[in-house]
Amino acid sequence: MTDLSLTQTAQQNADVLKGNVTCVAAVAFFSLGFPAAEILLQSWGALSLIAVRNALGAILILLVWLSFEGIRAARKAPWLRGIWIGALGFGSGSTLLVFTQSLTDPVVTALAAATMPVSGVALEVVLDGRRLTFWFVSGVVLVLAGGFIATGINLSDAGFGLGAVIGLLASALFAWGSRATVKNLPGLSSLGMTTVTSIGMMGFCIAAYCVGVFFETPGTNIPVIDTKSVGLMIVYSCVALAISQVLWIRGVGGLGIGVASFHLNAAPFYVMLILLAMGRDWNWQQAIGAAVLATGVIVAQRRNGKSKTVATP
Image (tube, rainbow, N blue to C red):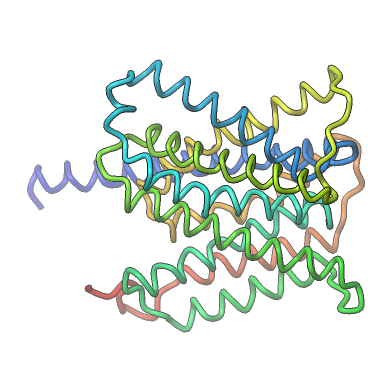
């Protein structure tokens, strides 16, 4: 092996490591939002909470982008395409995810988000030619079994069952939006990609809130703002959304949605640790379910013998 090839291999390994570290950080910050949302949902309506949260996060990301890359980059951005991707993928996805949490709890919501690897790899199967393998199918079965164990779904409890289904749909929309962002917005930095899609996400959530207010639907109430709610909203919008989303898009750009989404299996464990630090009791059923889900995610990455995982287009 030549010195050049050794250098290229070392650079590739460094890029992979950087991408994985970026995704780990993104999921860790993302997980902070679940406990914050649980407290906020005690007084906020789901639609009003997600609208304010996404608006604050999108504005922060926009200001950071403009300060780093300037107005010229903003003028050249494919805004219509980015807004469409952000509205459908992240706007509807985040709205459904907060409804999931309002119907269940933060760990169940994190577990729903952690099923994104199934959606991410499924998109690669359909759109990028990834081959279905024995290990992948086995991983899917384990992921579904883990989610069933962790959530403790009772088929007679329609509300809880609906919450689980909504969470799965939300994770699928997030997976589509993540892939579409890095595939369909060429020429933009990861910060620029995050900004234009976040504006679309914000627009969708504000529109959903306005529709809810017009039809007087539940979930649109805004409580009296106090110091505690401001602090929680900063965590929920600036840390768990703005910082996390920028890191996430960068990680997806480096690893691809299939590999990057596997990191979401850590979200339930992060949430459990955060809640444990807040004085909550350890839940063995959720811990076992999360472990089974994580095992499924790992198994899904294995290859059959020496066969290639991704087919040539």
